Length: 145
Image (cartoon, rainbow, N blue to C red; front, side, top):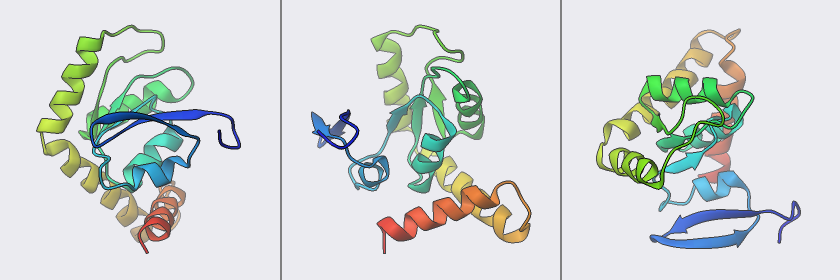
């Protein structure tokens, strides 16, 4: 177990693995990661976008519903639920995963969204996107020197 005592469930070569706690950004940088299932919090969305990976989201609370709506509207992923506590079935999850994995528009939208954030920050230094862009850029450089 890692410092936090938690575990991440993730898929590697289509085999489910339970691994001791790792940094999410290192997992996201792995070339075999092509879809992320997440709660849709803004911190997770920023880390996922730093690798331009499509998402399947389900909000739990807090900022999750707004993150889910933005990701879906931008075409960077799909939402299993739109409000915290809304239920969905395993079949719903499989359908979303299938849709995202088979349609390249989701990955293309992630690339465009990441570049839009970086461009907005470069062109307007007082933009609210500047901290996000700096984070995305730093993560990409750190994980892909």
